[in-house]
Image (cartoon, rainbow over all chains, first blue to last red; front, side):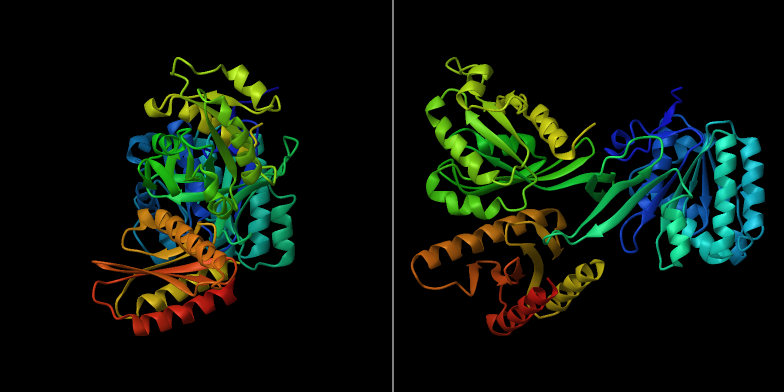
Length: 394
Length: 121
């Protein structure tokens, strides 16, 4: 039986989870210290509110007012959803502060006190509600590791019986081995790793599905960035745009980008075009290369660490296709995903997409996208296709 | 891993304290921004990409002429100077100075910082 899936609202993650989190299941964002992991739980909470779900936010790390204020940083207006959002205040009593929330944990240092309130809330809210824990690690710090783990077990069990989804933010501070091992393996239905990397020299943050017991797992991690406003976006630090002289590479970069600059003389790129694009949950930097072969050293230099390539060809100029193939070899030597941009398709003497495919001798799975870069026609379709090939949709 | 990111940030913060330095960034040799301290953060990526191209082009040009590898590229303009220097095989360091900054101390500090970056990476 297919239950309604609860979307996490994190770009690409729902695809990796085949739609989202099934009812009654639990998910933990396992954040390594130092990365911006708390945003994951927040983004999921906000997304669930926008998709019409009832949500409960368990505020344990800060005063609920301040926690809710944090959402506005990302441009997420929580006021609109007041009637579907309940907050459990597991903080104020700790510092003797006044709380205006309906649900207050009298003693946040006692795990049973938290459980009692949660049980009460479960009775009050409809089935299919979403519980988001702002920070499981702070609960653990206050109530002890073993107590918390046992409590989480019971919370997850009642989630299952009441068809509720539990989502936890957790920062993996140096807790005991056995605590961390239980969290990673059997405590939750789904574990999302959120970490930092120093692969090559990119200092980035990534997330990846480490466990999801309702599907066959695909090993896949994605770089991300946190934008304010905007929240989590998949980050592609380098996408290359290459192709022969006068194919329209710079025009392509500019028409795709939110903002872009070029180093050119008399309309010809001599160093590079650089553009940045924010589009549908993706944030990418676009590097356009020069086309003439005397600039090949520069092309080699800037093509390092690219994640994907657009090869732009002039559809009216098949004589240049040899050069195009050569440039593809220079830039995709390591088997990078690429998409062919058949530009200038509005010209009367443009040859057909099929013709281009044959002449470039392309494998069948490589997309050839018809574009008119000067009018922004086809450029975003092309971007989506390349992103799809890079991030490996399901 | 996270700590080396912090270390890079520290190198830049220290560098920024030197009189006359307005902005500083660390980028990979192929133009990806690693860390920056800039008044206009949104341009940092472009700044990194262009500086990497500049240094790379300079290195290609000079090496082709058998003059060895350039120590640094300095761009002098009306409102300030731009200094790009290699920091090990993977990275480079770029510094933007104010209009009247004297280069002596700045070059010394930049050199020092580039060595630190090289060690961190």
